[in-house]
Amino acid sequence: VIAALLAATMSTISSSICSVSNLVVDDYYKRFSKNPSDAKAVKVGRLATVLIGLFGIGSAFYLNSFETPSIWDLFLRVAGIIAATTIGTFALGLFSRKANEIGTLTGIVAGMAATYFIAKDQTIIFWLYPIYGSLVSFAVGYAVSIATGGNRKAIDGLTFATLKNRTGGLDDSTELKSPL
Image 1 (cartoon, rainbow, N blue to C red):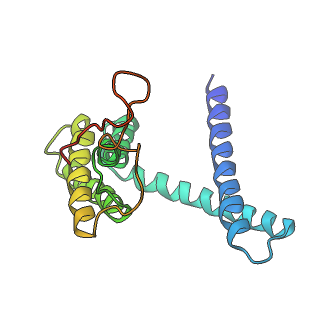
Image 2 (image 1 turned 180 degrees about the vertical axis):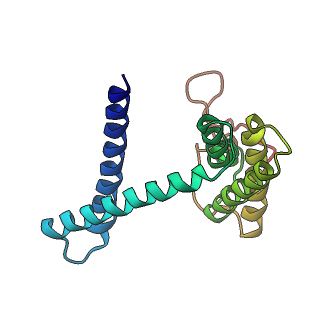
């Protein structure tokens, strides 16, 4: 049973490393290289595989240094910090006409940083990290979007404020209003 668990784990990890290496080769090397060749792509892929593996080993040692009761608790904390801004980011895009790239990215960074410091001090339980991070990312993202000039792209039909219901009830000229 232990051998089967180790084999499944190694299979999952190796396929993940190969997927990330493939992403590096196809999305970065071949796109940005002036003369991409198959031989060079294989070398870049092998180098990326080694670097990703070393990064994984280093991350494992780093995560092992935390004083947590179990790896599951650590996973929930790290996932909570990383994913804490998701709801705020989607809400910013759905409910605001003024959201732009700079504001959204700044909101994500601010939400992750705020969630990290809350997690470090352990002032709230980790189940509340997504709510806190989303509120911070929405507020900071909205404020920075307004400060940087708002959105200048056509967003008709992409936010609740510009959505037109074509399936019934409302005609094509009716717009749903948003407070933002």
